[in-house]
Image 1 (tube, helix red, strand yellow):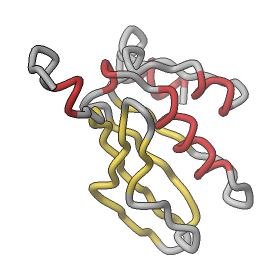
Image 2 (spheres, helix red, strand yellow):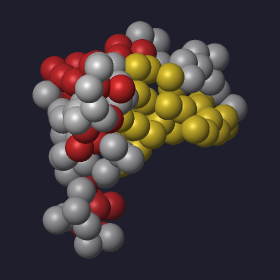
Image 3 (cartoon, one colour):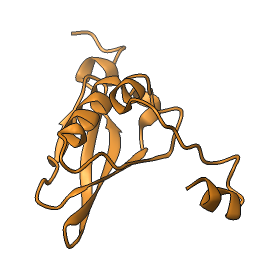
Image 4 (cartoon, helix red, strand yellow):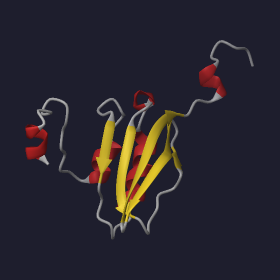
Amino acid sequence: VRDNIRNLGLQDAVSVVKSDALAYASNLTGSEFDVLFADPPFASILQDQLLVALSLHLRAEAEGCIIVMEHASRRPGRDEYAGPTVRLVMYKERRYGDIAMSFYRATCSRNEAESSPNEDT
């Protein structure tokens, strides 16, 4: 992966992280990336855990970010993961035999109080 990044001249635009996935996802706010690719082991439940962690921890600056989750096609993701600030909504899924790629877009979850702070209630 690093060789491909270097060959494409994208060293300043791309980072590769080798870390505990849940700990890493739990520290993201959304300002660190535009597109996040995740490829957890197919035999694990990490796919769902990562998407839950991201929905819980991402903040408003994640609006419009894309999360691409590779997974076993027999284990599809949910259509939506809703956190306190951000919802991850699946907008596309592609299947390639035993492999699938689910594409999620981060959108802000705004309640009425946040969208109209000057109105009397």
